[in-house]
Image (cartoon, rainbow, N blue to C red):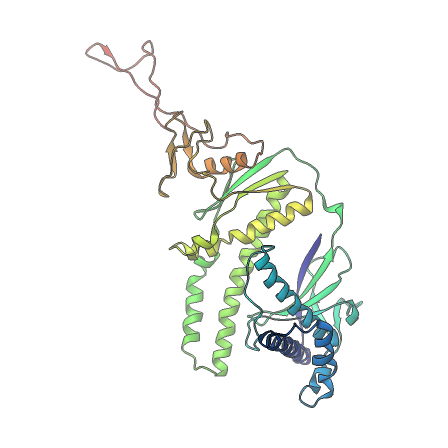
Length: 406
């Protein structure tokens, strides 16, 4: 399995200028190649091959006066830009063939894009120095903050600049089978929600952190300050960075929460089941901001790749499975219920069920996991007391009493 590790970089002034030059050259080559292929398509001709584009747009372009500055950056960066365009076209056409979800056609890149990136392969002869700096060709030795040790020698490194002006070094590494965890007996189903982020079939409820909701006041102030700045001014650029950093802080906190929770669930359970939610439909409702704040898609993606890495089983059940309508005790479908009903009584067996935990148990059952409904907080309904039991008497007549709901 290939994994990606990202570390924060701290380039100095000249290194930031060199990186900006690399971002710009890679963007120009990408746009030139895209323009050449779109021109050929409009003329009804075959797409130019990558080798021909490399010779025309890199090798020959460096000899011209208007593209001579392409020689100031590593040639590997420019070659990888052409490969990125090939990947974009391949993904676009695979979407029509049904091999992957549909996506738009490749578009031209802008210097105002929030994210800039260049990639260095082994041919670029980049390396990690003895002083733990990242040595990049025609850029220099850049200081990196290493938060962990790489499990193997990386094959590529991608330098990324995000909207908040931060730089990251992203490494692709190969992992071995030593990461497989010892087997455990527990299996769990997960029901994702908004009031509680995740409800497990064993009765555990994880509160929703609501990172965006908690940061709304701070974000509102930074966005208001940005709106007051004149367009094109330096102060507007500074205000834009403050807004981007505030949003990056929220995204980082959410990502850290997802990583910690997904790792714990995978370590504690041999099999994990989740429901395939229609997130694209949910974000078109009044709950859109809360759904985006929860980040269910990113969380389930982490569960899936961590299960594959650590030797666990991950199951995703269909979104049309009536997990909230079926009693986990007797299996009778009781029909849909409004969202404000959190506890309901089964009309067939009389069991009182917590809506979320009952759904989590049904998710696990639908996935074929060996779980019980013991965590579903089943409570008995009203059961008449026996006539022989002591009760309240009025006018000498025994009264039938029931067990109150707890």
